[in-house]
Amino acid sequence: MKEWDRQIGKSNDKVLTKGMPDECEGTITMQTVTYAKSLDLVQKLDLSDQMKLIDQLTDMVRQRMTAHPGHSILELQGLGKEIWQDIDAQKYVDRERASWDG
Image (cartoon, rainbow, N blue to C red):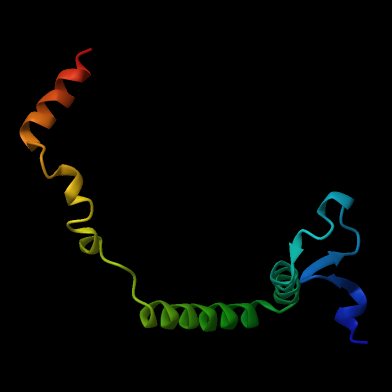
């Protein structure tokens, strides 16, 4: 049995961690435990290795962001236009402004 498997028990894709309060049992995912374990390992690195890791992670994240560009607000153009089809925009704005006065 691997050291990692001895430290945690697995149940239905959920992780049971030693020392956790009973109410947390089964609520922590493997990703959460892996992140916590990774953070613990990083804290054990010396400062120069931590800086190298930051540089490498920054480059990796930038590459992923440019590989999957975000959406443009312009993609929403015309969305819901059927709702406003028979409404005069100026009359609508005038009614809204009048309602502000109470």
